[in-house]
Each structure stands twice: as structure tokens, then as C-alpha cells.
Image 1 (cartoon, rainbow, N blue to C red):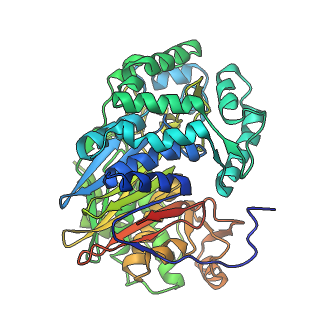
Image 2 (image 1 turned 60 degrees about the horizontal axis):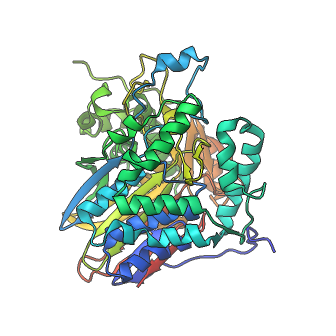
Image 3 (image 1 turned 60 degrees about the vertical axis):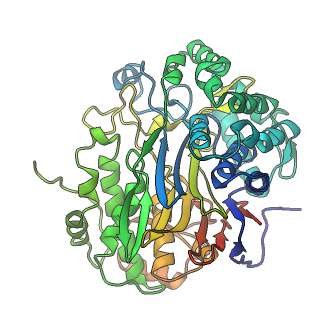
Length: 534
């Protein structure tokens, strides 16, 4: 039986509920969040439970050793949490160049930055949770100890990673990855049960110490010893001095709705910049080639500028305020013509994962995302702990003239972004689309589908997506209408129709009716997406 074979068209409907809802990319993780809601937790507790479970039941996309961001709506106010970690204090661009690297490596100990995920859980629990962190992590611990059967898309990407890694991970520092994720000398199959006792032990220690064991205790000692042994840069001191940062979210008003993102170092700015540019142009039309053309052109301009300028705020050569200004949007919109263009960075005025959404019947809502960056991350697993370390440092530049150049203690341009929508000061709800550089493009398409075309949450996520890659190159999903493909080609776009939708992101949406409190959710059909609600 082939669990990836779907010969017939299928559709899902929007899910409605009143008391609570969790939407994410893996059914067991969604159930973990629902379990915590039913035990008296709020939406924030449910999100932490879901996030912790995702490190177990979807390790192909995230882990304890990754980073996280969150937008939390509670008591009529939106709060932002940046739990991305900095580069180690002992690393520098010069040191990496001296080792013979022309750019930051993808795998190994070099691209590993300080993990923010455990600190994010603890910080969210402390500030907004109702239940103790140790209780909230119980479902994830259970999945890790008892094991669970792999879902179809999870199994697909696990096997793909194993095939790649067995050819490239040939040195000693990668041994623990195979011991943890391929314990029988192969990737587990779809439907086969996999467990990770070390992962369970780590989660229990995080819960019992509010994550301090990870940053200051026995786990920190193990991480420090591993990196010393393998000539890495991350140290216990880097871990012990780390704290997540509460930030003021940034927004753009799009046709009466306020779209909210985390400010830099995250790339959520790219989505806001693109929306601001696009709204300067002619009103959009349904399934219209000229509308898609202008969406793509607005996105490529915003992305080109974002990758040129976004990093730690104090290192940016242009302010956030200017990039979100009407002046910027009007200037960028003015260069969009009738045909595809190769984007050039904006001339500066003188003087660039797993996602979940949760909501409860008290009005609390959370948009949360965490990631090890590229699949399993760096390939580094701390032996006996289940901790897969991220490779987020790969995004640093080694060019001293670039705003995002690698420096000790600096956070890099970050791809993972949670989104949130409000209207007239009231919450509409959380949304997100994970998947590397697809994320702001997914956010842009979710907002335009919702606001311009009034699509319900499930239809918004199911609509075939486009993805700008570089220059005039645009990828579209297999279901993208051929007449639009042909029209966009005539406008000069280099359109590639892909064989499947795996690279177009995985999204979740929960909207809340402000009058009745009824929740409506959509989940991702491109993965093992699920909504748990009551």
C-alpha cells in the first residue's frame, strides 16, 4: 500500500469550534495541544505542548536545538517574542575564512548558533501560561518514550534526508544523528514506530527546570563538551548568557486589515513590504494573469531588498520605518512594468520549519513557529539527548561589507516568521506558512487570498501557490492553471511547473469571529496537517 499515492482530487472544509483549537502540520502534535487545553491550559500552554511534541513527531523540520518566534494575543494586546539565538562569542568571519571556507557551511559544528527553542517555551509559560511547564510537556515526553508511528509526509522527508546524509555525513561528529534517527541502519518507514528515550529525558529536564538545565546545567555541559571535542565554537557560556527578547511587533495596513510580523532580524518585513508595494497598484482580479504578475514583481522587489538589508536592527543600513513607509512602497511600485524584470536592490535614501496556531475560549491566540532551519538542521545531534542542533548560522555572510556579516554574538537574517491579522483593533487571528524563503511569499498569498478574494481559511491554504526563486524564475504548483502559466510566460516570466507542492510551504490559519467567539481553522493539505478542536 502506497501512502503517498493519491489518484483522485480531494478537498477539506474549514473546521469550526468554540472552546479551543490547535492547527499544525502533524496530527499527534495537534492532539497534544488539545489534551493540554482540555486539562485546563490556555492557548499558550497548548502551543508549547504542540511545539514540544513537534520536536518528537516531526524531527525532519524542527528540534529542541532550533530557534522560535511567537506572536501572542491576550487581553486585547499583541506581544512579540524573538527567541532566535546568536552566533557563538568565539566565532568570526575571519576564523571561518582562515579554515578555507568561502561561505558558511551548511552542515557540521560551524553553522550552529545558540538554540532559542527551550527558552521560548519557558518564557511563554512564565509570562502567559496557566499550567506548569513540566505538565505541559507531558504529551511530548510520552511520544518520545513510548514511540509513535510515522505519518506519510514525515516518512517521505525522513527517508530523503537519510539517503542524502549517509553519503555526506561520513565523519565522527555525525555518528549520533544515525544512532538517533536511523537506529536500525535505515530511516523508519511510514507507519513504523520510532521512539527516542534520550529526547524524553531532555524534555523532562527542560520541564522540571524551566529550561535552565539546557542553558546552565547537565545538558549545557554535554553540549559544551561535544563542541570542544569536535573543534566547534558553541560553549556553555554562550548558552548561559542567552535570553529571548520581547519585541514590539511591526505591521502594515492592507486594505483595512493590519498584518503583523516580528521585526528584524526576521524576514517577516519582506511580506509587509510586498503588501505595501502591491496595494499601490491596480486592484487585484480573481485568477488574472496581470494580478499574479504584479504580485510576483512586488514580492521579488521586497525580497531583494530584504536580503540586502535585513539583519540585527542596529546593523541595518536603512530603518524599519523607512522600509514600511509609503515613500518606499511608491518608489518600488513605480518600477513595476508590464513584463518580468530582474530585480536590483533599492537605492538607499541619502543621510532573509514548523508552524502552529492555537486559540482558546478566553480570547487568547498564538502564532508560533520553530525550526532547525534546513530539515534536520546541522546534522549535529548531542549524543544520548535527542537534541538536533540547527544550522541557522549558514545564512551569515562572510563578506565584511555585507550588513549580515558573521560576528560574535550576532543574530543572522532569519527565515522563520509567525503572522497575525487584526482589524479595527480586534484580533482576526494567527496564520503562518513555514518553508525557508517561501515563508513571506506564503504570508503574502494568505493575506491577499483572504482580504482581496474573501476565501475561507481552508480554501486560502489550498489555492495553488507560486514561488519566486531568483531573477525572472518562478515556480508554480502542478495545479496552477495552465492558461495563467502561458500568460505569465508571455509577460517574460520563466515559469517552472513543479512535480509536487512540497516546496511551497505548509500553512495553518485560525480566525475568530469577534461577535460569537467561534473559531474557524484551515490546515495544510501539502503535509500531514491536522486541526484538533473542541
